[in-house]
Amino acid sequence: MGIGNHGMVKIKFGTDGWRGVIADDFTFGNVRIVAQAIADYLKEEKTGDKRQEVVVGYDNRFLAEKYASLIAEVLSANGIKVIISNKSVPSPCVSFAIVERKWDGGVMVTASHNPPQFCGIKFKAPYGGSATEEITRKIEKNLYRSNVSDAINPELIIEEDLVPSYLAKLESFIDFALIKDAGLKIIADPMYGVGSNYMEQMLEDTNCNVVTLHTRRDPLFGGLNPEPISEYLAELKNKVKETNADIGLATDGDADRIGVVDDEGNYLTPHQVFPLLLLYMVKEKGEKGKVVQTISLGYLSERIAKKYSLEFQEVPVGFKNVADLMLKENIFIGGEESGGYGYQGYIPERDGLLSSLFFVEMLAKTKKRLSTLLKEMEEEFGRSFYKRVDFELGNTRWEGLEKEQFVQNLYNRAPKKLLDIPVKEIKTYDGIEFILEDDSWLLLRPSGTEPVLRVYAETDEPGKTEKLLAIGREILYNA
Image: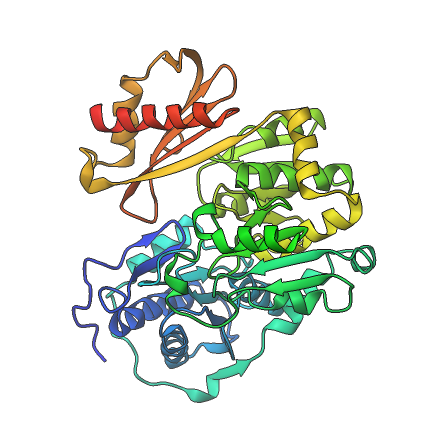
């Protein structure tokens, strides 16, 4: 078929691939165009005579398996061999399959945590992580440059179960002998996504009791967004309290992010979860190396790194920025504000199931309640109350403004104090972040994936965080 004029303006790659609204810009025609652009990119990068090989997977979204089949067909028509998953799978499952086979890349059909009306396409590089900015730009340049090939080659498309080797890899990181007799009660919530029943399967040879919510496929995700944050985890929080469970563990739509609920039914923010993981890795597992996190992930992990003499670095928002460092340096743990965490010795990719298993191991190893572990961490390193609020671009004067202009405008008007606390540092490498003398901070930045402005704040008191967010809103609307 010819390239036509399907969504000429609408196909735009964001922080982690292309996302669009199903039947609006995310159409069969546009999916074929993106698949052809990926095929053209792969052919441009080809060296030698070996046939190129790609893994294709998909999540539980509406028509996701059909979109994946279309992508496989277009790739095969370009002479590229495709292993396509025989069922919906987590994004890190696709990423691991690429590395395990030493293939040329992978395509995952998913919109991750976005609302049900969205679908998306992520391209995974040969190293098993998200495509770099350079790769993404090359794929974008290929959009509409050539006709989408119709010469489908069924012999180059092979269906396969990608899950067994993926789960075996996850299990290699975990001390199951430690967990076997722990007798933990765990509530798992895959949020109708692709993480269903994996916790039960991986812990079936232990005496842990796993109860899984929302296991059926529901492309509407129960009327909620499949994002493991507090406002969408009411049922998980209630279930943990009602059953006196030890922990609640949620994964997002494509199971690469995690949400955690403690034994008292309290949702833990990523600004508590990542430091807990870091502290466990250092104190109990003896891990060493460098810690990397995105600019929006807060101060507790930096304090922990300082105490244990660990090198620490911040990067712009987006896990691919964490992954870039994991490919180059001795990074033993990396994290982002939206609940994605990666680990040394694995792929440079976040994995919600692996993070969940580390929390189970943490409880088994320490023999302490999660609420106790949190309290102990807070007593030593301080408390964290974090919150993020999003504002639609159309409701502000910033619509259409480049990020550099946005930052410069706010920098020129930067206050010397917030909440009557002096501003000790201003960071401008991803939006603009004001660091106060007590380590509280306020970050203002345009999203890289959605048409919104994000306002982030973290302090040591909930009321203080709300006041800082209100100041952020005032800055955006009155600057």
